[in-house]
Amino acid sequence: MNELAKQVFSIAKNKDFEEIGLSIFRYQANNCAVYRDYIRNLNINVSEVSSLKKAPYLPISLFKTHDVLSDVLNKHQITFSSSGTTGITQSKHLVTDLSIYEQSFRQAFELFYGPAADTCILALLPSYLERDGSSLIYMIDALIKDSNHPDSGYFLHNHDDLKSKLQKQQQAAQKTILIGVTYALLDFLDNHQLDFPQLIVMETGGMKGKRKEMVREELHDILSKGFGVTSIHSEYGMTELLSQSYSNGEGIFNCPPWMRITLRDTNDPLSAIDGQKTGGINVIDLANINSCSFIATQDLGRVYPDGSFEVLGRFDNSDIRGCNLLIS
Image (tube, rainbow, N blue to C red; front, side):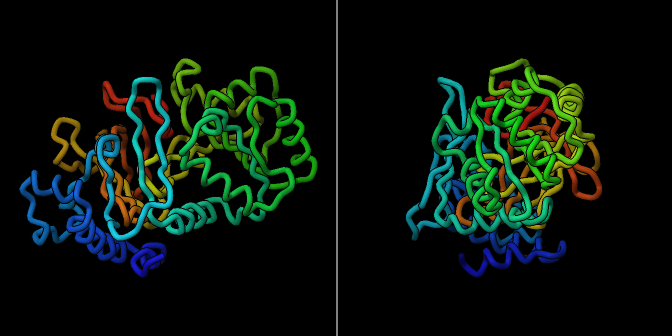
């Protein structure tokens, strides 16, 4: 891991974020060919970008058609790819330094949930396990190993086994996280009900075309009642990022210190908007040093004064992909 990456994961205040973010912007504006061309086409002078508020965001769709790389000296170690239905071009993220991704997801997980070593991690992620190139599976693999718990692991469609494992953890008063793709959690509840108030249920990934989309409030109500918990957690991440945000309920997400959400005008993608208005979600992910840290997603959202945010849906005609999206 390079020195700049170490600085990213040491960010403690806004001033640090701004200074390190500007250093990464200048590096990527010079070294990422796709981002450099995009900036040039916008007639933006890199030397005049004195604040992150002026940094342009690369449309996320370009990850489908281009290799978005700032690190041209090192061969990529892995290619993460998005999920997608037949006929939809997948996004690809070429990662040249997996240690940065590993630092990002481990440090963020511990920030929000404590050490993985203290936790039994159960994963109900059939649609992710049944394809290659999932960054989520790479993360969960590592966290399951970090947990070092004999019952941590994956479940495909073996719901009876999953219920037994959950009941065992409850009886043992073991801290447990069940992370599942949304439709699979609902499939589980079709035949099983639990009353496990201490369980952390984390949904990710949406319906994947397996079930009809639901508003968040209705979905979380069903999941809460089915598992016997007071709230449903969520994970917001995507192939093109190396960081995740987490929600511990009500669909309100919080970022780790090296990640930030801003909004753009839905009618003018180059114009930022402030306040609690609805806009297109832009992500600054400073862990994305070796690709692009400034990404304009296809999600709609709202940002609150404390930096937390809410995902409200997607732009019309957007591809349905593997990030966590619930229409509300």
